[in-house]
Image (cartoon, rainbow, N blue to C red; front, side, top):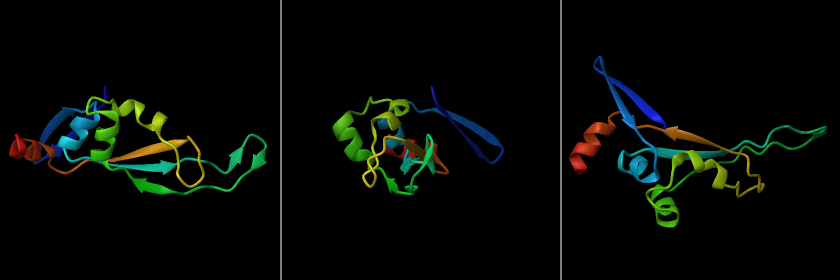
Amino acid sequence: MKIARFRQKGLKYIIPVETLGEANSDGWRITARCAWGRRDAMKTIRECNNRFELDLDTLIWTRGAAFPLSMLSERLKCPRCGSRRVVLLIGVPLNPIAKRIAEG
């Protein structure tokens, strides 16, 4: 279980976020980065520095709102080099609780 921790005016908020639907409702932004390195075994290869922001609405449409975030990086592939070594960078908004209250 992944837990996001937030601090605001001395208070701590702990919000469990496990699925794509929860991340989308809290306004998270997810960027994928290719992690293809400089070396593969004994040979030197060119490094791929491709980054792309994921559209959460499209991911929810194709994978479902209950798809776990922990499995997302295993299902992605770099569109430039075709590598399956992808790292997720998660951008958490400053005040996700206010957004959740305003929507709900």
